Image 1 (cartoon, rainbow, N blue to C red):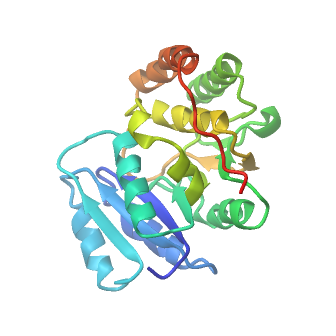
Image 2 (image 1 turned 90 degrees about the vertical axis):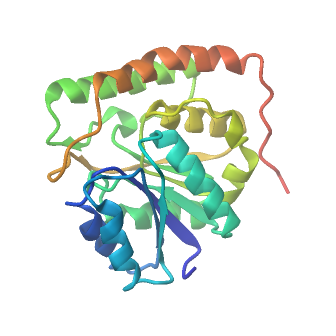
Length: 249
């Protein structure tokens, strides 16, 4: 452990990006540790990470899982690992450079210096769309899915499906991670909704989201269906659930 912050990066078949993204994070002026969670990538992603661990033995970590077990379960595994290793700031980021590693500094500062409990790298702050190289149909689907989630849940969050986020450790310690039900991309919605219901301060940081240039996207129509239809069930369940509240001490 060389930092107070760890960047969790789930991977599946990211051999074209993984070495580049690791070096990009380690080249930043602030030190971040990295935890890669690889779901048995047949392309050798984990092998590349193991080679790089010799170069960064105290800052680069790897958890290997057998098979594709879902984005949500990967992050929850990473959250537990990060809390067990006493990191104060725990960050989610994609491996494919859709999230600019330089924006890690802004997410970290929002939590470490400006009072946010959860900082979100937002594509849609104040209804301004900051997405590069996505087909217009996908942009519209993502934007209106986020708007729909905001209306149904009541959250004052513009980018409800964002996956670039920084948590203070006490957020993850407060949330009962075992009660998080979504396993796919709707996991991102449920985590924000739960943090909001627990009374945590959420801040959106404007970012530019760029479509991947290397490798193959894991997105599909079923992911958006989960986000659209699953959120109704999540909202209904919330009426019968008591959420632990943010400590004021």
